[in-house]
Image 1 (cartoon, rainbow, N blue to C red):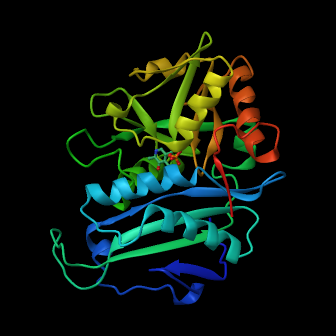
Image 2 (image 1 turned 180 degrees about the vertical axis):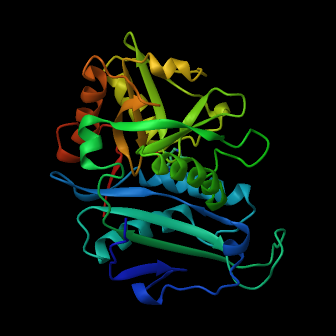
Length: 306
Ligand code: PMP
């Protein structure tokens, strides 16, 4: 999907015109994948105006990702949260995808460089339903990838780093080339891990299960949101490993992510699921999108007005 340009980008503490937000070809991050980033959304709400969703949780993860890769971010978490609000407001956006990124910049080569400067950039632009409006309503067709997710103790899957998305790219492009909306990665040991850019939930006989952190997932903030909302509905969620064939017998499957929001899955590897017309997924979608249309009370303070 082509990026819809906006006016301003926040770079290293200053708002600059979109077209000027360029970088040198010898940028460290470009060569070694040394970047960490976040994907966040802002929504227009009836009671609080335009709000960033779960701003502190995303920025906390951003700083965590940076620390794992030994980046020094020369800002406080509060400053970056404020910049995320500013970029939405100053671009006059009503709803937006927000992309903070920190990367090792220009100045020194070699993967172990500790002297390359850290650049921090925040952009915001419109981005609709990642897996399509039709997919949001009727579900998407997914396939298990032939590529496994990175094993624990290799590259940390729980950190949101640019380099991790080489795995996501392999999984997602393979699926799309075979006509599926998205690919699902298995963990190193063959149990189900997650989608290329989404966490996965499976419902069988009213029980909701999602893979644990040790199965090479990114610990999604939408995943946490959904677990909280399901608990509020009186529905328990178990974090446990499960095999691939568990998917084929599911009553409902849905995927979660900032981009994908809460998207139902209609089939896995050509096997139709969702025989029950999504009673839990639909209730959950109503609760989730209700946070932004005012039907669900923001009782956890997840909406941060810009
Ligand atoms: N897994 C992967 C690999 C992702 O890229 C994403 C999107 N950031 C997610 C899960 C969902 O995370 P979140 O809900 O925090 O966006």
